[in-house]
Length: 428
Image (spheres, rainbow, N blue to C red):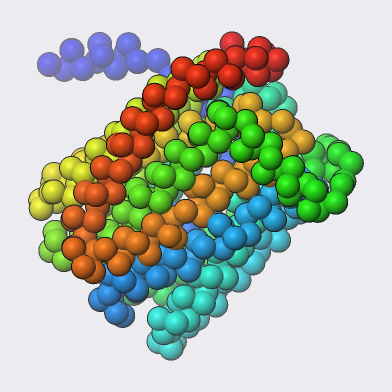
């Protein structure tokens, strides 16, 4: 047996192509700084969910907090997209990360002094949502500026998704232990400290020619209308955004219901919530690594709708489980499908979009990915309070599978329409 294991390990070969984007100094700085910050972000998200559930025991208020934290992305993302195409993106990110750090410190002070109320949590969720509505599309559009070779763009996006989900694996596990040991406040405090790493990384970068300053500026409203016309007038971009919006509306709110599954259905505590979110993150990390390992340029194909179907089917199976040892691998499968669907959509959009409109298209991506979640969170919280969390999640997964099947019927026409774009951009 030992000899067999040695031979198997000796046959393994590390494919450094998976990490090729890290050859770029600017992206390397971003990768390290963002990695530290994201662990703190996930710690805060888990602590927020558990704090709301501990204070209120209400599925509806879990949905309200989720709604208040993400609705600004739906309302403000188009404005942020125009600014991301007009302003220096690195400076804008320094501002947004600094504001997010201040929000975390304020919440930690309120929690540690035991003066926090549910209404304060809702207010600070709205504040962070406003910050994120500018941060996320700007960060997505900024990726191309950190790279010396545009051919590394797809790999960089996939590695960024790996980073997010690596932190998603680590952060919830740490948060579950800290919440059980010392309470939620320390998670918010550590998250505030973690922002220092990404702010320092941004300040250390050497960006030669910011793309947001390289173009002539037109009127704000003209650029806003132009972004919508460009995205929704081109069928492949429109269909990718619509599928992503459906996944976010019906599927992503499963995170809001996790405290109910952890405490009420699986009969666990904060550590159980941490394990569930960590398992979901592990699956999502696997999906991101799977995309990063692909050497060819991203193209629209069956990967995107198939991943959406896997996500939906995983949610349906998870909703029926009453055993932790079964729930963990099932939610991991759902996390894999969710990440491959989201990241592949991001990669395809960034590979086909016009550089002059990149910020605006990524703002619409943010609207579809983040902006639809609050409506889904509110719906999920309301339904769960009436028909129960398991039935709500089962229905959500079914809608995701149906959307994936509908998208796949349009795939041949979309690929035909994209062929000239791929030829123009030299995507093999």
